[in-house]
Length: 447
Ligand code: PLP
Image (spheres, protein in one colour):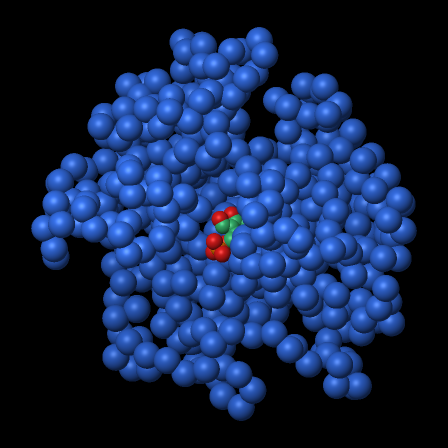
């Protein structure tokens, strides 16, 4: 490894960081992470902190998950790559498809389409939604609806359903035919509604209104995160997702659950859809499917949707989507080992218990620090603090101040994530009681 000073000096000279301004990365070099163990990461100066970000919501089992590492190493020796495009397949993708069918049986999802990550999974879900309607003779169903504040990735179609201007404006015009409705976000919403159940009702009415305005026969799918993640951890009221399901069914619109973050235990349930008692028509997964150790994703598809493709005799049911790394044998081996370990450790239980502990701790901090405007979470290990400069006006805190909170927390022992004026906490699902306390006290030091 190159020496620390060399790395700091050279970091942003010849590389551009995702979701960052190149000049800012040159002016303020980021922490250089060179190692990890358990739920901790270690930087180039040897500073060790609890990773309260969990990689990027993906390292659910922590950094020392031997079964996944060994599966990757073994697979690299046996078959490091072969494509599963028409004509060939590999043993791992078959075994994994069976496992995924069992894992998501409760969600009614039985077919897997493999991708190389979250944006890919979303992109292919939206494409297949259009194709599904075409196959059923409803070629006019091409539009998509989604929630403001929702995040669905960066491919053009996925970015078009994103509900945050930061990920859209520089690249507009994006795809036409994508419409956004308000999120069930109690802290700020156009209905001035703070009661979660009543807000869910307002948003559901707005969705139905938009569907009628657009003409239901033009809408292909509604895509939503069961708990909005990157938009600042926004858990809706329990009536919300079932309400969306009902509306989608009523108007023949496919419901795509974007579970890139929520699948595999993060909400304290095996999927976010299951958490809310909803069966989506398709579910996007990625991230924790390999514990973040290998880029991989799977779009899960219901029987009902799959049969429309499988029973097609015109040839138009052929899936004209796929990636070189769809069904990568190493990724599939990692996913098989990861799902086994996820089930063996029964991570949902710990996610729920530690999530409650984290949420209670954050509520306590809100009582002490005026800059905390809102605390969100309470559904597994996804929580957020929204920081404001004035509680009365809810004016967002400035960038420098929230960066200072992050630096303070890092110095005191926890890596936390900043997104806009939110601090997002999504540690590995295997964190202990003591780890959560470390996160909370480091955060308090930062505050
Ligand atoms: N959808 C959701 C809900 C996400 O949180 C993300 C990434 O954070 C994506 C899609 C995009 O996934 P990726 O970054 O793997 O392309």
